[in-house]
Image (tube, one colour):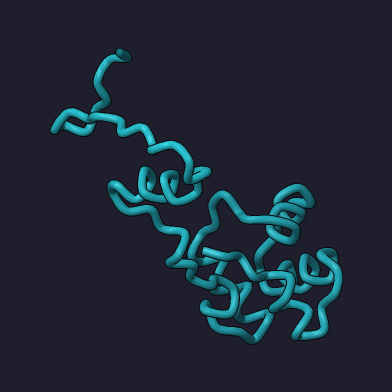
Length: 109
């Protein structure tokens, strides 16, 4: 998921984290400066659903404005080896790593 808070806030005329922080506090969501910095500048590690509700009310947005799916970044079983092989130089055959049926790798050769 892509966290899109800054762009959503900018679209509503909010250009500074402190402005949003004040608006959130007026709606009952008090956020520390450190957590606000993380929300504003990066990806939040965790966020309560109730907090998302308040953010959406303050910004007048939908959850889809804040969280944008990135399905191309989802790894499927076996996909990692395929991606590595495709990225390789093309001159040498990619090394195949054998795995046990339970998903664990075999000891080094």
